[in-house]
Image (cartoon, rainbow, N blue to C red; front, side, top):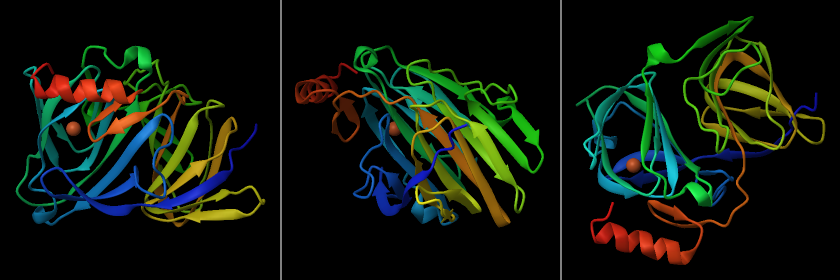
Length: 281
Ligand code: FE2
């Protein structure tokens, strides 16, 4: 096994998006503008409704996928094709925006904790104009794998124990695991070589080996970018740990992006704005 080393530790920066939602931007900020195929990663966690109640009213997307994973709270989703639903705690919405959707994402609660993540994953050039599609799974549909000292919620990918996540995306072959570790537990898992891989600590802390042979600590809300290899190994700290392990196949294509549109060229980007403004989404 070639264990992946930690190459970069990133702390998110405070950001405001939508109609005034306070969040933490982890990918898509100066310290980490993008990480092919990942374009953006936001974390939101607040029990103050002023931070989230404004939500994300009607806005478009084209050319990539948005992945919303909720840990706490409820979000209502509506799009211009008539799709509507509520994402609840522990649920995932994997939306392939493709050639374009216009949607809103609004908190379905007036108070209490809202906590979750939104990840943007790029689509290959040949699939950017595909028909929009959804893969939505409630908490009960996400398999939970138990190991010594570890519990894994498997959203997509296949684990070494054979647990298969319900989301399928052959284009970027993503892995998306929500892993909880007991204090001091070690976690080892193969990951496809060549995939971009990140670890985002939600609770507690972990340590991962770096290139100098030392051990780097990742605390709550910190992201670790892993170098190449075919496996990950990390150790939970004294308080245990909960983290997201996310990996995906890089596309290696040019990226032209502006706000909610991510294409390959400036020309395609202008076309996206024109199509949106003329109601073609
Ligand atoms: Fe959106």
